[in-house]
Length: 55
Image (tube, rainbow, N blue to C red; front, top):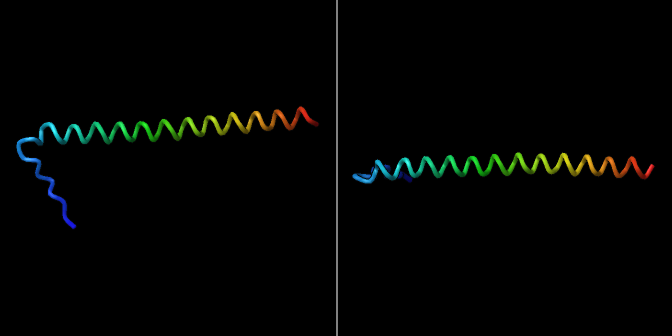
């Protein structure tokens, strides 16, 4: 399968739009992963705190 990357006269508008979209998706994915990691650490901390207070 080959892709036709020729955007013709719309290339000056199309390629920057694709680049901005790709950067936005990368930013959203990275942000989501970092936030999930932060929440997981917080949940683990709270779980450890709860277990230590039961003892």
